Image 1: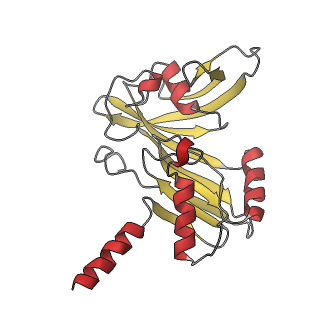
Image 2: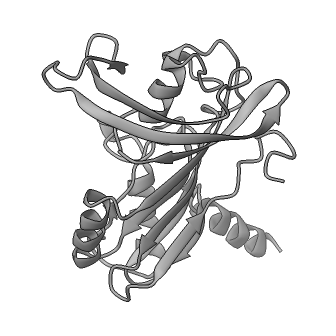
Length: 237
């Protein structure tokens, strides 16, 4: 009995802290939890990428280094779909899809207040605020300014706030967080961009689904991440 409990405990400890949404020889799609950086943290802290590599190594008994390329990235407080390439060939082809805007990226966000208009296209120019380690809205002629485009529609109200579906047309850093906050609708829990409301884990921004063409077989793939359990009950209905 003790040995069985030990085996179960070891199995549980070896499971990754994320759900596997899709896996084949070329791709790995996972649902990132809040608080975990996708990649590139200082000091050797665990990241989604490093944990996914360890998962591949253990699951498939891979010796040596494991190749994984992060095709999409989420800020640490954001949850949802992250797509990883398991081969350099898949990574090259997916990178071209992202570069040519042939990938559909849909997010859900809960923002403060009742959003008006209920649907709109948002076009801004954004730049880096190095001093405060955030992004800001700038003029189009400022050196380094980049255009940011997204569209949103309000799905419903949630306790007086708004649940939005957001489609990204560009992939700028902190883009959704900044553009919605600039219009007076910060994402719940996002203190960096003006929210004064608490959120149980991270912020109320979730990468709901990602649509791509398979890099080898060519068929359309849709990866959808369920809402985390701390989101309001009924938001997914």
